[in-house]
Length: 90
Image (cartoon, rainbow, N blue to C red; front, side, top):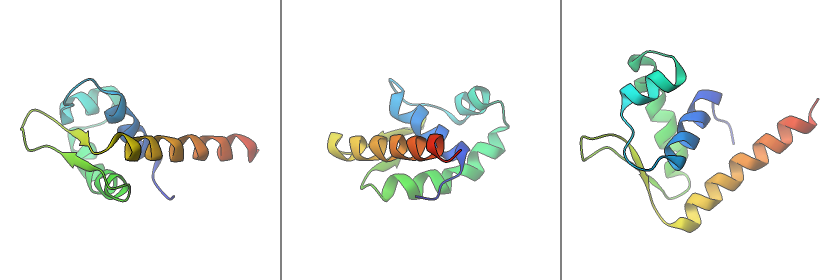
């Protein structure tokens, strides 16, 4: 899976959030501009959709990931596998 570090961090943050997350929240969390977050959204969306999940912002309150628990776990496991590979490639 090829994905930028920032997009991966955004997805992990969204998966662990207890509700909608605004672009402003993400910008503050990652100490970047809102414009930078908006630039990452297409990659974030593409990655999420490749696991049959949806990045929803229709409520206007912020972004949330929707889908089956199974697919969310698949995505989470894929990220854990990437971390393991990075740790061993020293």
